[in-house]
Length: 159
Image 1: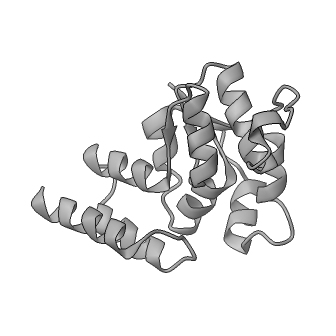
Image 2 (image 1 turned 90 degrees about the vertical axis):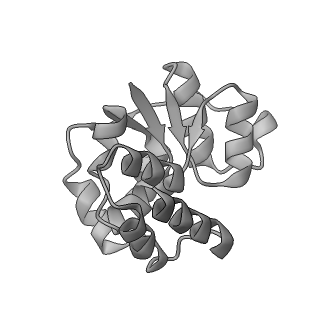
């Protein structure tokens, strides 16, 4: 199984110390060049910069085919490249958090999972404790409604 990731899911999973779940869930994870550039930019959190400087073997940077803006003009370059790369290699998933990018990927027939979905799957496979991961995520600038985060807590309590 393979996944292509945009910047956001990788960034947050690294910040909360859970990036190691990605190869367990997806095997190999590919990122397009634009995502690599975003993860190595000067504005990237130091923890993420250090992690990407010593990227694990399961994370592969791959050039995406030329991406025309067209219907994806509302989607940023990293997301566009991730969606196109996922289509190009017939990836099982594309990892995206942005609402517009997720809608665009789904319209193009690409399976989408975001940071929260990754954490839920990891919890279901007993790789992490979802409540701990959500608490750690709340310490970052990750944006999700409090109702959504509470529903994940309640889901975990019912298990």
